[in-house]
Image: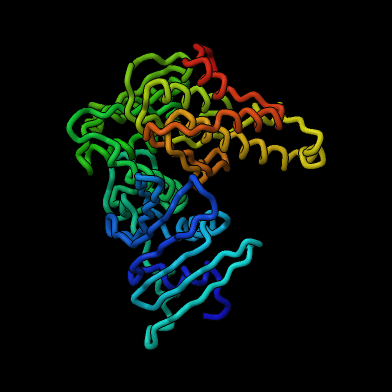
Amino acid sequence: MGKDTLESMLEYFANEHLQQMIFSNPAQKGGLSKVRVRPVVLKGQLKFQAEEFKEKQAFHQNLSFEELKRYTKDLMDGKFRQLELLSGMGSATALAGKKGTMTIKVKRKPGEPENVRELWHNRKKRYILEEGIPVPFLIDLGVMTPEGKIIRTRYDKFRQINRFLEFIEDILPRLNKDRENIILDFGCGKSYLTFAMYHYLNEIKGYPIRIIGLDLKKDVIARCSLLAEKYGYDRLAFYHGDIGDYEGVDQVDMVVTLHACDTATDYALAKAVRWGAKVILSVPCCQHELNGQMENELMKPVFQYGVIRERMAALYTDALRAELLEREGYRTQILEFISMEHTPKNLLIRAVKDGKKKDNQEKIRQIQEFLHGDLTLARLLEAGEPDQKDL
Protein backbone atom coordinates (compact mmCIF):
# COMPACT_ATOMS: atom_id res chain seq x y z
CA MET A 1 0.00 0.00 0.00
CA GLY A 2 2.99 2.32 0.19
CA LYS A 3 3.11 4.88 2.98
CA ASP A 4 0.26 4.13 5.38
CA THR A 5 -1.87 7.18 6.17
CA LEU A 6 -5.47 7.53 7.30
CA GLU A 7 -6.47 8.47 3.77
CA SER A 8 -4.65 5.58 2.08
CA MET A 9 -6.06 3.19 4.67
CA LEU A 10 -9.62 4.34 3.94
CA GLU A 11 -9.13 4.32 0.19
CA TYR A 12 -8.21 0.65 0.44
CA PHE A 13 -10.66 -0.56 3.10
CA ALA A 14 -13.70 1.77 2.87
CA ASN A 15 -15.78 -0.28 0.45
CA GLU A 16 -18.43 -3.02 0.52
CA HIS A 17 -15.93 -5.39 2.21
CA LEU A 18 -15.69 -3.20 5.31
CA GLN A 19 -17.15 -4.84 8.42
CA GLN A 20 -16.71 -2.11 11.00
CA MET A 21 -14.55 0.73 12.26
CA ILE A 22 -14.35 1.43 16.00
CA PHE A 23 -13.09 4.74 17.40
CA SER A 24 -12.23 4.36 21.10
CA ASN A 25 -10.11 5.74 23.93
CA PRO A 26 -11.53 9.29 23.93
CA ALA A 27 -9.00 12.06 24.53
CA GLN A 28 -11.39 14.10 26.68
CA LYS A 29 -14.17 13.35 29.11
CA GLY A 30 -17.73 14.49 28.57
CA GLY A 31 -17.80 14.05 24.79
CA LEU A 32 -18.32 10.99 22.64
CA SER A 33 -17.28 7.77 24.36
CA LYS A 34 -17.16 5.60 21.23
CA VAL A 35 -18.02 5.67 17.53
CA ARG A 36 -18.81 2.67 15.36
CA VAL A 37 -18.93 2.88 11.55
CA ARG A 38 -20.36 0.24 9.22
CA PRO A 39 -21.28 0.17 5.51
CA VAL A 40 -24.93 0.45 4.47
CA VAL A 41 -26.65 0.58 1.10
CA LEU A 42 -29.21 3.37 0.68
CA LYS A 43 -31.14 3.71 -2.58
CA GLY A 44 -28.55 1.52 -4.27
CA GLN A 45 -25.68 3.71 -3.08
CA LEU A 46 -22.94 2.67 -0.65
CA LYS A 47 -22.84 4.82 2.47
CA PHE A 48 -21.10 4.57 5.83
CA GLN A 49 -23.28 4.82 8.92
CA ALA A 50 -21.60 6.37 11.94
CA GLU A 51 -23.13 5.45 15.30
CA GLU A 52 -21.95 7.91 17.96
CA PHE A 53 -22.24 7.00 21.63
CA LYS A 54 -22.53 9.74 24.26
CA GLU A 55 -23.51 8.78 27.80
CA LYS A 56 -26.65 6.64 27.36
CA GLN A 57 -27.57 7.98 23.95
CA ALA A 58 -26.66 6.94 20.42
CA PHE A 59 -26.78 9.19 17.35
CA HIS A 60 -26.56 8.17 13.71
CA GLN A 61 -25.50 9.83 10.49
CA ASN A 62 -24.82 8.47 7.01
CA LEU A 63 -21.65 9.53 5.24
CA SER A 64 -20.37 9.40 1.69
CA PHE A 65 -16.82 8.16 1.10
CA GLU A 66 -15.44 11.72 0.95
CA GLU A 67 -17.33 12.64 4.11
CA LEU A 68 -15.99 9.53 5.85
CA LYS A 69 -12.41 10.64 5.13
CA ARG A 70 -13.02 14.08 6.67
CA TYR A 71 -14.98 12.56 9.56
CA THR A 72 -12.19 10.09 10.39
CA LYS A 73 -9.53 12.78 10.27
CA ASP A 74 -11.60 14.99 12.57
CA LEU A 75 -12.19 12.23 15.14
CA MET A 76 -8.51 11.23 15.22
CA ASP A 77 -7.39 14.84 15.53
CA GLY A 78 -7.81 15.24 19.28
CA LYS A 79 -11.09 13.41 19.96
CA PHE A 80 -10.05 9.75 19.96
CA ARG A 81 -6.68 8.07 20.37
CA GLN A 82 -7.46 4.72 18.75
CA LEU A 83 -9.13 3.43 15.60
CA GLU A 84 -9.60 -0.26 14.83
CA LEU A 85 -10.77 -1.35 11.39
CA LEU A 86 -11.94 -4.81 10.38
CA SER A 87 -12.61 -5.81 6.77
CA GLY A 88 -12.94 -8.87 4.61
CA MET A 89 -9.77 -7.57 2.98
CA GLY A 90 -7.76 -7.36 6.20
CA SER A 91 -7.48 -5.13 9.24
CA ALA A 92 -5.85 -1.90 10.40
CA THR A 93 -5.24 0.12 13.55
CA ALA A 94 -4.41 3.79 14.00
CA LEU A 95 -3.01 5.22 17.24
CA ALA A 96 -2.86 8.97 17.82
CA GLY A 97 -0.01 10.26 19.97
CA LYS A 98 -0.18 13.21 22.35
CA LYS A 99 2.07 15.32 20.14
CA GLY A 100 0.01 14.89 17.02
CA THR A 101 1.86 11.81 15.77
CA MET A 102 -0.03 8.96 14.12
CA THR A 103 0.97 5.29 14.04
CA ILE A 104 -0.86 3.14 11.50
CA LYS A 105 -0.53 -0.61 11.08
CA VAL A 106 -2.18 -2.44 8.19
CA LYS A 107 -2.63 -6.17 7.64
CA ARG A 108 -3.87 -7.00 4.16
CA LYS A 109 -5.16 -10.47 3.33
CA PRO A 110 -3.17 -12.14 0.54
CA GLY A 111 -4.79 -12.71 -2.80
CA GLU A 112 -7.00 -9.61 -2.80
CA PRO A 113 -7.14 -7.66 -6.08
CA GLU A 114 -4.59 -4.90 -6.47
CA ASN A 115 -6.99 -2.56 -8.25
CA VAL A 116 -9.51 -2.09 -5.41
CA ARG A 117 -8.82 1.64 -5.23
CA GLU A 118 -9.38 2.03 -8.97
CA LEU A 119 -12.61 0.04 -8.83
CA TRP A 120 -13.84 2.15 -5.91
CA HIS A 121 -13.23 5.48 -7.63
CA ASN A 122 -14.68 4.30 -10.93
CA ARG A 123 -17.93 3.05 -9.39
CA LYS A 124 -20.85 4.85 -11.05
CA LYS A 125 -22.37 7.51 -8.85
CA ARG A 126 -25.96 6.72 -7.88
CA TYR A 127 -28.30 9.65 -7.32
CA ILE A 128 -31.64 9.82 -5.50
CA LEU A 129 -33.12 11.42 -8.62
CA GLU A 130 -31.55 9.36 -11.38
CA GLU A 131 -30.60 10.48 -14.85
CA GLY A 132 -32.76 8.85 -17.49
CA ILE A 133 -35.96 9.10 -15.45
CA PRO A 134 -37.86 12.28 -16.48
CA VAL A 135 -38.95 14.51 -13.59
CA PRO A 136 -41.42 17.25 -14.62
CA PHE A 137 -40.11 20.06 -12.42
CA LEU A 138 -36.50 19.40 -13.51
CA ILE A 139 -37.60 19.63 -17.15
CA ASP A 140 -39.46 22.93 -16.62
CA LEU A 141 -36.58 24.38 -14.61
CA GLY A 142 -34.14 23.63 -17.43
CA VAL A 143 -32.10 20.94 -15.69
CA MET A 144 -33.36 17.91 -17.64
CA THR A 145 -34.57 17.16 -21.17
CA PRO A 146 -38.02 15.57 -21.71
CA GLU A 147 -36.18 12.27 -22.23
CA GLY A 148 -34.60 12.49 -18.78
CA LYS A 149 -31.10 13.47 -19.91
CA ILE A 150 -29.30 16.04 -17.77
CA ILE A 151 -28.41 19.20 -19.69
CA ARG A 152 -24.63 19.46 -19.64
CA THR A 153 -24.48 23.06 -18.42
CA ARG A 154 -26.91 22.24 -15.58
CA TYR A 155 -25.17 19.17 -14.22
CA ASP A 156 -23.89 21.07 -11.17
CA LYS A 157 -27.48 22.00 -10.34
CA PHE A 158 -28.52 18.34 -10.71
CA ARG A 159 -25.73 17.27 -8.33
CA GLN A 160 -26.67 20.02 -5.89
CA ILE A 161 -30.31 18.92 -5.82
CA ASN A 162 -29.33 15.30 -5.14
CA ARG A 163 -26.85 16.32 -2.47
CA PHE A 164 -29.58 18.28 -0.74
CA LEU A 165 -31.92 15.29 -0.90
CA GLU A 166 -29.23 13.21 0.80
CA PHE A 167 -29.43 15.61 3.75
CA ILE A 168 -33.22 15.17 3.72
CA GLU A 169 -32.84 11.39 3.57
CA ASP A 170 -30.72 11.46 6.72
CA ILE A 171 -33.41 13.23 8.78
CA LEU A 172 -36.41 11.15 7.61
CA PRO A 173 -36.74 9.46 11.04
CA ARG A 174 -37.50 12.91 12.49
CA LEU A 175 -40.61 13.31 10.33
CA ASN A 176 -43.96 11.71 11.11
CA LYS A 177 -45.70 9.45 8.58
CA ASP A 178 -48.96 9.54 10.54
CA ARG A 179 -49.65 13.28 10.39
CA GLU A 180 -48.95 16.29 8.21
CA ASN A 181 -45.42 17.67 8.49
CA ILE A 182 -45.10 21.42 7.94
CA ILE A 183 -41.92 22.58 6.18
CA LEU A 184 -40.99 26.23 5.66
CA ASP A 185 -38.50 27.30 3.00
CA PHE A 186 -37.37 30.89 3.65
CA GLY A 187 -35.91 32.71 0.65
CA CYS A 188 -36.95 29.90 -1.70
CA GLY A 189 -35.95 31.75 -4.89
CA LYS A 190 -36.55 29.72 -8.07
CA SER A 191 -37.34 26.79 -5.77
CA TYR A 192 -35.29 24.02 -7.39
CA LEU A 193 -34.78 22.50 -3.96
CA THR A 194 -38.31 23.25 -2.75
CA PHE A 195 -39.82 21.26 -5.63
CA ALA A 196 -37.21 18.54 -5.07
CA MET A 197 -38.21 18.30 -1.39
CA TYR A 198 -41.87 17.95 -2.26
CA HIS A 199 -41.24 15.41 -5.01
CA TYR A 200 -38.97 13.29 -2.81
CA LEU A 201 -40.96 13.42 0.44
CA ASN A 202 -44.47 13.22 -1.00
CA GLU A 203 -44.18 11.48 -4.37
CA ILE A 204 -41.34 9.06 -3.63
CA LYS A 205 -41.46 8.51 0.15
CA GLY A 206 -45.18 9.07 0.74
CA TYR A 207 -44.87 11.46 3.69
CA PRO A 208 -47.87 13.71 4.37
CA ILE A 209 -46.35 17.17 4.06
CA ARG A 210 -47.22 20.81 3.58
CA ILE A 211 -44.43 23.00 2.23
CA ILE A 212 -44.51 26.80 2.29
CA GLY A 213 -42.04 28.76 0.16
CA LEU A 214 -41.40 32.39 1.04
CA ASP A 215 -39.51 34.98 -1.01
CA LEU A 216 -39.38 38.75 -1.61
CA LYS A 217 -39.48 38.49 -5.43
CA LYS A 218 -43.09 38.61 -6.63
CA ASP A 219 -42.33 37.38 -10.16
CA VAL A 220 -40.49 34.34 -8.77
CA ILE A 221 -43.38 33.54 -6.44
CA ALA A 222 -45.88 33.82 -9.31
CA ARG A 223 -43.80 31.50 -11.51
CA CYS A 224 -43.36 28.89 -8.76
CA SER A 225 -47.08 29.00 -7.90
CA LEU A 226 -48.01 28.25 -11.51
CA LEU A 227 -45.60 25.31 -11.63
CA ALA A 228 -46.92 23.86 -8.35
CA GLU A 229 -50.45 24.03 -9.75
CA LYS A 230 -49.30 22.45 -13.02
CA TYR A 231 -47.78 19.45 -11.23
CA GLY A 232 -50.77 19.01 -8.93
CA TYR A 233 -48.64 19.75 -5.85
CA ASP A 234 -51.65 20.84 -3.81
CA ARG A 235 -49.74 20.93 -0.50
CA LEU A 236 -47.02 23.22 -1.84
CA ALA A 237 -47.70 26.96 -1.68
CA PHE A 238 -45.59 30.06 -2.35
CA TYR A 239 -46.04 33.47 -0.74
CA HIS A 240 -44.47 36.90 -1.07
CA GLY A 241 -42.97 38.11 2.22
CA ASP A 242 -39.88 38.45 4.39
CA ILE A 243 -38.51 36.31 7.15
CA GLY A 244 -38.92 38.78 9.98
CA ASP A 245 -42.64 39.41 9.43
CA TYR A 246 -43.89 35.92 8.61
CA GLU A 247 -46.44 34.62 11.15
CA GLY A 248 -48.50 32.29 8.96
CA VAL A 249 -48.06 29.20 11.16
CA ASP A 250 -47.77 28.44 14.85
CA GLN A 251 -45.89 25.16 14.61
CA VAL A 252 -43.28 23.90 12.12
CA ASP A 253 -41.52 20.55 11.74
CA MET A 254 -38.65 21.64 9.48
CA VAL A 255 -37.18 25.00 8.49
CA VAL A 256 -35.03 25.36 5.37
CA THR A 257 -33.10 28.52 4.53
CA LEU A 258 -30.59 28.10 1.75
CA HIS A 259 -29.35 31.51 0.77
CA ALA A 260 -30.70 34.02 3.27
CA CYS A 261 -28.23 36.89 3.18
CA ASP A 262 -26.35 38.03 6.30
CA THR A 263 -28.68 38.44 9.33
CA ALA A 264 -31.69 37.07 7.41
CA THR A 265 -30.26 33.67 8.31
CA ASP A 266 -30.33 34.66 11.98
CA TYR A 267 -34.00 35.63 11.81
CA ALA A 268 -34.84 32.33 10.11
CA LEU A 269 -32.92 30.31 12.72
CA ALA A 270 -34.54 32.23 15.57
CA LYS A 271 -37.98 31.63 14.08
CA ALA A 272 -37.20 27.92 13.77
CA VAL A 273 -36.17 27.73 17.43
CA ARG A 274 -39.27 29.62 18.54
CA TRP A 275 -41.47 27.21 16.59
CA GLY A 276 -39.63 24.23 18.07
CA ALA A 277 -38.74 22.91 14.61
CA LYS A 278 -37.44 19.35 14.72
CA VAL A 279 -34.98 19.95 11.87
CA ILE A 280 -33.17 23.03 10.57
CA LEU A 281 -31.22 23.06 7.29
CA SER A 282 -29.43 26.32 6.55
CA VAL A 283 -26.83 27.41 4.00
CA PRO A 284 -25.85 30.93 5.13
CA CYS A 285 -24.18 33.50 2.93
CA CYS A 286 -22.86 37.07 3.06
CA GLN A 287 -21.93 37.10 6.76
CA HIS A 288 -21.27 40.85 6.86
CA GLU A 289 -22.33 41.54 10.44
CA LEU A 290 -19.36 40.10 12.32
CA ASN A 291 -16.97 41.20 9.57
CA GLY A 292 -17.89 44.79 10.32
CA GLN A 293 -17.56 44.33 14.08
CA MET A 294 -14.39 42.31 14.59
CA GLU A 295 -11.70 44.08 16.58
CA ASN A 296 -8.91 42.45 18.53
CA GLU A 297 -5.43 43.80 19.16
CA LEU A 298 -3.85 40.34 19.15
CA MET A 299 -5.55 39.40 15.86
CA LYS A 300 -4.93 42.76 14.19
CA PRO A 301 -2.06 41.44 12.00
CA VAL A 302 -4.44 38.74 10.69
CA PHE A 303 -7.59 40.86 10.38
CA GLN A 304 -5.75 43.46 8.26
CA TYR A 305 -5.99 41.19 5.19
CA GLY A 306 -9.46 41.70 3.74
CA VAL A 307 -10.02 38.28 2.22
CA ILE A 308 -8.74 36.52 5.36
CA ARG A 309 -10.90 38.71 7.58
CA GLU A 310 -13.96 37.97 5.43
CA ARG A 311 -13.45 34.22 5.52
CA MET A 312 -12.71 34.15 9.23
CA ALA A 313 -15.79 36.25 9.95
CA ALA A 314 -17.94 33.83 7.95
CA LEU A 315 -16.51 30.78 9.73
CA TYR A 316 -16.75 32.37 13.19
CA THR A 317 -20.34 33.42 12.49
CA ASP A 318 -21.50 29.97 11.42
CA ALA A 319 -19.62 28.23 14.25
CA LEU A 320 -21.26 30.55 16.79
CA ARG A 321 -24.65 29.99 15.18
CA ALA A 322 -24.12 26.25 15.59
CA GLU A 323 -23.15 26.70 19.24
CA LEU A 324 -26.21 28.87 19.88
CA LEU A 325 -28.42 26.16 18.41
CA GLU A 326 -26.69 23.57 20.61
CA ARG A 327 -27.52 25.79 23.59
CA GLU A 328 -31.18 25.69 22.54
CA GLY A 329 -31.30 21.89 22.50
CA TYR A 330 -30.27 21.09 18.92
CA ARG A 331 -27.63 18.58 17.93
CA THR A 332 -25.83 20.58 15.27
CA GLN A 333 -23.40 19.76 12.48
CA ILE A 334 -21.67 21.94 9.90
CA LEU A 335 -21.37 19.98 6.67
CA GLU A 336 -20.00 20.59 3.20
CA PHE A 337 -22.58 21.36 0.56
CA ILE A 338 -22.33 22.22 -3.14
CA SER A 339 -21.97 25.93 -3.86
CA MET A 340 -25.13 27.79 -4.83
CA GLU A 341 -25.09 29.24 -8.35
CA HIS A 342 -24.91 32.84 -7.14
CA THR A 343 -22.57 32.41 -4.16
CA PRO A 344 -19.49 30.27 -3.46
CA LYS A 345 -20.64 29.53 0.11
CA ASN A 346 -20.72 25.78 0.61
CA LEU A 347 -21.35 25.08 4.30
CA LEU A 348 -24.65 23.72 5.51
CA ILE A 349 -25.79 23.93 9.12
CA ARG A 350 -27.90 20.91 10.00
CA ALA A 351 -29.58 21.02 13.41
CA VAL A 352 -31.79 18.26 14.82
CA LYS A 353 -33.74 18.92 18.01
CA ASP A 354 -32.88 16.42 20.73
CA GLY A 355 -33.86 18.50 23.78
CA LYS A 356 -30.45 18.31 25.41
CA LYS A 357 -29.22 21.86 25.87
CA LYS A 358 -25.49 22.48 25.85
CA ASP A 359 -24.07 24.52 28.73
CA ASN A 360 -21.97 26.83 26.58
CA GLN A 361 -23.39 30.28 27.31
CA GLU A 362 -20.24 31.56 29.01
CA LYS A 363 -18.00 30.27 26.23
CA ILE A 364 -20.17 31.98 23.61
CA ARG A 365 -20.00 35.22 25.57
CA GLN A 366 -16.22 35.00 25.85
CA ILE A 367 -15.79 34.37 22.11
CA GLN A 368 -18.03 37.29 21.18
CA GLU A 369 -16.14 39.48 23.61
CA PHE A 370 -12.81 38.31 22.16
CA LEU A 371 -13.99 39.24 18.67
CA HIS A 372 -15.74 42.41 19.83
CA GLY A 373 -18.85 41.01 18.14
CA ASP A 374 -22.56 40.95 18.92
CA LEU A 375 -24.44 38.43 16.77
CA THR A 376 -28.05 39.04 15.83
CA LEU A 377 -28.98 35.40 16.52
CA ALA A 378 -27.64 35.67 20.07
CA ARG A 379 -29.74 38.78 20.71
CA LEU A 380 -32.88 37.25 19.18
CA LEU A 381 -32.62 34.05 21.20
CA GLU A 382 -31.88 35.91 24.42
CA ALA A 383 -34.94 38.11 23.79
CA GLY A 384 -37.01 34.96 23.47
CA GLU A 385 -38.69 35.97 20.23
CA PRO A 386 -37.47 37.43 16.92
CA ASP A 387 -38.05 41.13 16.36
CA GLN A 388 -40.57 41.99 13.66
CA LYS A 389 -38.05 43.75 11.49
CA ASP A 390 -37.84 44.22 7.73
CA LEU A 391 -34.74 42.63 6.32
